[in-house]
Picture 1 (cartoon, helix red, strand yellow):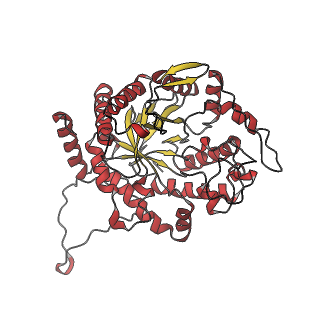
Picture 2 (cartoon, rainbow, N blue to C red):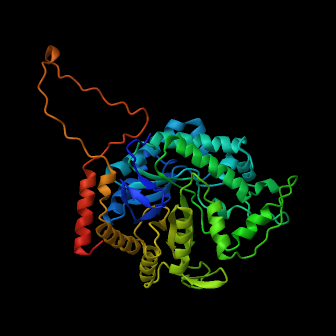
Picture 3 (cartoon, rainbow, N blue to C red):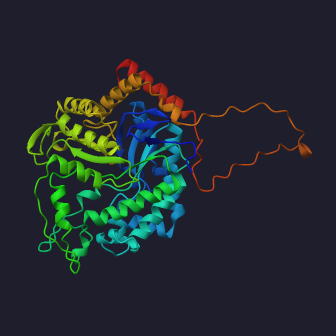
Length: 447
């Protein structure tokens, strides 16, 4: 599978490559491309126009779930997987046609599968649990189905599982998913349990795809992550309850925890950042109290890049630019531009803006995408990146001698069997139109 080495690859030194050349670029989060589409009729394929529009901004890849975000999705997958696949196939086909790369998140919500199976989140720590077996079955099914598609640029295991781990409150039952109605300590999850699953999940991906990058999908490394993980080591085996500890970590613990949270064969250090409050205080978060000091935005971003470099892993800022209550402010676009510049200066090769559940250009979205497109243009020029080389060329048909036809009938050519999978070489003329539109917009200065 993936014998043509499609997608993003993490080299032994931790550098990111695409088609054998070093790659950097800004992408976009588009949660609803499939997650909001699978339960709708096929004629509600809103993602098609969205993908085309995204390309006109000079954005070449998106991050999105390859699953639903709740238990009912997996119920539907159990009862009618081909119906689910027909929708996901359509999404991947559209991405192939338009040359849009996809970072495919495989098991977005840490609560969805335990809820579906009437289990607990702590089940992730048991390789023989139904939760782990089911999740690995789903991962293998998705990866094997789409590993030959050039549209898939990378795999991701989940979304912010690390921010759900090592939290326990046996008195008030805080920090639990909404589906838990009769809570027990087993509804909490330690990072050790989470990492048992993540290691198995990454190995399941590697069984089929030894090439593409694998991201954990983790959120920010909490300032107290080391002490929280250490406290969870004292879990009571009978009740699965422990006492949390919130001591802030020094820099060496930050680096150590980052390594622990990205076990091989995960080859990418993932984190997410929010850049404004949502409490009405209208503050831009551009400095961080970490490691007993106050770090600038660029310094904090550089800490992740340095940590990844020591681990010889790539670094992926999977969500950034969520300015919450500040998105309507006129100056927010310039703060976003500064953020993008700080990301590049910190040496982070991959970053996805957190803009929308479903595509729109309202408020700051259009401005943010224009800025990322400009940044991408500069990166491509400086690094001589040709993204189109990541896609298979359309083969020209050789002229052939005409053969006599039986009984005056035109002989039909046999149709290629897709076997329920996406054709890796599917490239339509829409891609040329998109590239032309993007070039016109960038040269005219309008987006």
